[in-house]
Amino acid sequence: MLPVSKIQLSEIETQIVEQAFQTAYQRETSALIAHVRDRSATIDKLSDLWYLHDLLSTKRHEIDGKYDFDENSFVFDFASLIKEGWLRLEDLQGLNKTILSKISALSRM
Image (tube, rainbow, N blue to C red):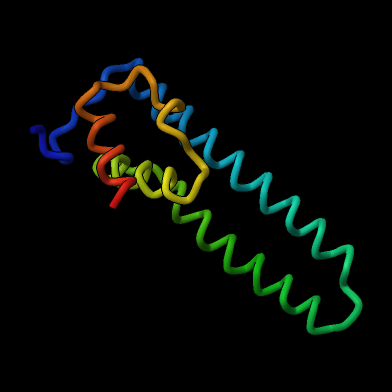
């Protein structure tokens, strides 16, 4: 089995990986925006406002780090995104079967 650090992506696979990251990013940020809209509609005390501030600060840090592409760790990143529900294996169709099987196995751990 090919070590993760030795994976060489074709030009098409690189496009699939970039598109998958973008898809997951869009899904997660859209869900966050919807959550913030729902929560902001119910703000009636200062502690609700501070909760929203803390949530946004945490999510910004989390999302910025999560979607920082690294070709040496994208297999692990995709497995995590699948676990979290932001990505599906179907979004990765076209990648080498060995890469897909690694991502699938890691996402079940």
